[in-house]
Amino acid sequence: MGTTGHVPLPNEVRRRFWRLIAAGSSTEDAAAAVGVTGSTGRRWFLGAGGIPPVHLAEPKGRYLSFSEREEIALDRA
Image (cartoon, rainbow, N blue to C red):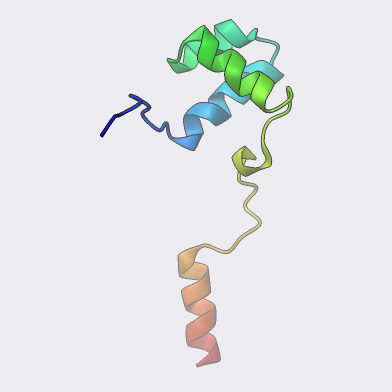
């Protein structure tokens, strides 16, 4: 059994990376700011074609919270 040494990072780390890129940071500077290597930042950037992946889109508040869903369910019951 081998291991690659890959440790999954929270999506928030990648979101911060893409926010820094959008603000004009280089891939190397954005990568350093979020605590990953420059090569990892370049891989993220090139792998996504220079565009933040959809699954990392910032939450927009368009969904109901659990408590809101629960309140609706209780009202319907």
